[in-house]
Amino acid sequence: MLNKPRLLTPGPTPLPEQIRLVMAQDMIHHRKAAFKHVMAELQERLQMLFGTSQPVMSLACSGTGVMTAAVTNLFAPGEKVIVVDGGKFGERWAKIAKGHGLEIVTLSVAWGTAVTTAEVEAALDAHPDARGLFVQNSETSTGVLHPVRELAAITRTRDLLFVVDGISSVGISPCPMDAWGIDCLVTGSQKGLMLPPGLGLIALSERAWNKAETVPPACFYFNLLSERANVQKNQTLFTTPVSLIIGLNESLKMFMDAGLETVYRKQWALTMLARTAVKEMGLELLAPDHFTWGLTSVRLPEGVDGGKLLEIAADRFGVIMAGGQDHLKGRAVRIGHMGWVDWADLAAGLHALAESFRACGGYIGSRDYLEKGLQAYHEALLTYDGTV
Ligand SMILES: *Cc1c(COP(=O)(O)O)cnc(C)c1O
Image 1 (cartoon, protein in one colour):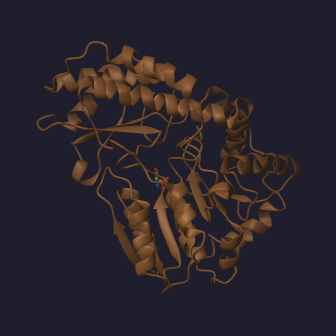
Image 2: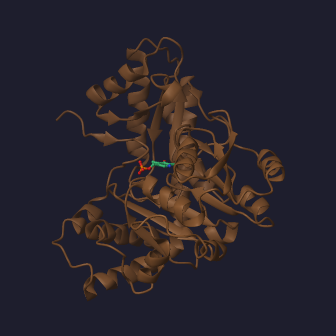
């Protein structure tokens, strides 16, 4: 009662009321005209969101499901692929590819740093027989933004597919598929798109479709060629989560009404708010240079227990944040500011972070970290020019 719960995790995120309300409507049948109408509208909006002229397919699964669909539809067992592994989700690409019987070359990157084009070029030169390159746009476990645009450019002249996990970047920072030259882009409903979990989205470039046509079907459920044939009829291959599709259509309507540029401007400004305030508190950013726009990760000093800090933030302030993963468990805090989060939610989150940090024995000298953060936010709103 004292506090309004504020979900500041890197997915799931809070939901706008208008999306919750459209999802509360009674069921419509997924093979009838009313639903086909929604699918037609949605397809146009999805193509705008992904920046592609190719169909975007919605699958009933979490983000890992569409990652799996990408691997199994684009590569045949035995093919060699290069995986950029700079955190939990890079590691996941490798696990999925291994499960599908691919030969994996892992390009390991230290947690908190982005892969460089030179590193990727060297790997591509060393393995000219590699047929795929896998990367995260935003590595959510560390808060790093990998240079997808530059990586796409170096893959264009080579005979391999560039596959991007955009689960925590689509709808958060620009990642236009066709303009940059991405062969496969995937995302999920519960990160930037202001929806509950449960929908995966995936699109392929023309050359990826050409490749997919040569790969023997690996599984009955994730069959992108059949999904594409259904999308062309404003349908889905199997029974889809109808309410989530209706919610997604509403969410993208909100995006299109505001303009994607405004969505990215807001996300950039929130990122400036969080990073400025955290630095002002004297805390260490986990991704100092190449950082994602939807979350801010903070490395905790020795002696401050991250698990306890998160508990205090939730119990005393109503703010729910995420911790570190693997070797960063208890050693980091990840504040999500993606989806339906605004400056006031984030200011509450940063205040909860500072006070919980103090309650765990940490020292914060600054009294005006929020003022400085909000100033950076307003400046960023004015100066954002759309470049990544
Ligand atoms: C959240 C996330 C995933 C996993 O998505 P699930 O919906 O939990 O399967 C994969 N990659 C990235 C970058 C993510 O942020």
